[in-house]
Length: 385
Length: 206
Image (tube, rainbow over all chains, first blue to last red; front, top):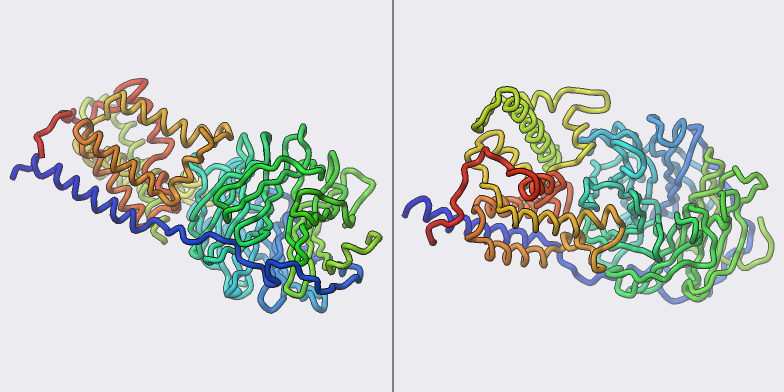
């Protein structure tokens, strides 16, 4: 047999082997469902505290701090992460972490969990900025950290990295970079708390920020590998930072930050198939001046949003509640406010513990991170803190 | 180093070596391709040169990421053994590929709108449709393009199976913006390369 006759056969054989190998590598779809929260899907009527919130200002080792995220460990202890440094985007910015005991309302140690040099060495590429940490404890009490990094350009040149810790955030595994865009992996970021899926994967609310802005549902496997992505657009216009609240094993609603001034309100999308598709639902009645927000489903089945409900500025942080799965929203407690429109109380993060305590952290004046802990009943009581 | 980091290093070295060889050929006005292992050694030395914040290859990786397996393979062939490069695809096929990839993958990122409501990039996560399309395209083009392209596609699929890139999306193993620009040159500007030998379109039957 001549070489020219063998070549097509060898090529065909190589292709068949390669296609079979690739087919073997394709992740199985499985059943994609949201994990039930600790209190189950049904509304819980258990009473909760009407006491005023406990308030903790985390110790700040840097002049500037922003974008906090809360993880609840199995012991009930909290880990709060944020990025801090001389100013946002400066070379000394690192991801900081603090431990908080919610029972005694005391802050334990705080430490720099991840610097840009450490991350750069781990992902083998230049890292000029880090930001937007998202922390979350899985069922095995491993702490997961997703963090945004920038090699060149501004935040719209970001990519997302994933690390894991088995000791509560003291030490971290090597980082894995999550590729989610075909064009130089340009401009993918995270900000909001993830949601657990029944197959062990995690649903992340990511977003794209370069030129046009939209939300991105990202399902990540236990090894940090991206399994799936879906776009989330409440309407025409630009939307960021989806915050996702599962309503049942298949249904969820996500609230998005709006960067289109002509809309200027929190947007919603919904899924009825475990995140396989997200339907637009337009904007809510909650104003949004292009500022971050947080959404969770409480144990009683109601939804809670923390947002800056102003036409411009971030000088008021307020809660909003919905008892009809997000169809209508009613104003609830004002968390922080100032007469000075330049003041900022922003980037809230909401989580609810097994005991029903709601923890809210947010950026205060870009100088500190404040943690409020309160019971659900306090939301229903009159008055403001 | 992890497998994706090693691949990233090889990919950046291939880019650096290709640039060095192009510069050499422009300087010497060479008409015929000449591979050079020396240039790869020089490329490795350049890649490892330390700069503030990381070495040269880590800077380049941060700037444009890793090239696809197909592009990296083409660059390695270009630098080491140009005679083994696949012949350029017919301009019509190249043009169709460029328009399809740009319209389906890159335009949605730039314009913020999915064509026909389909997020084509997301097809690469569980790429059953893509694998079916690759089989169909290979069958259709079997006698129309150089078989060496098929081997490059097979190599990309094997790399996907081995999970050697950071990405878990099959698109990133097959194609990247640099390859699309190269194909666009073939289709719309000038013949991609006078380096590789023209391979007869018709070959002996199997």
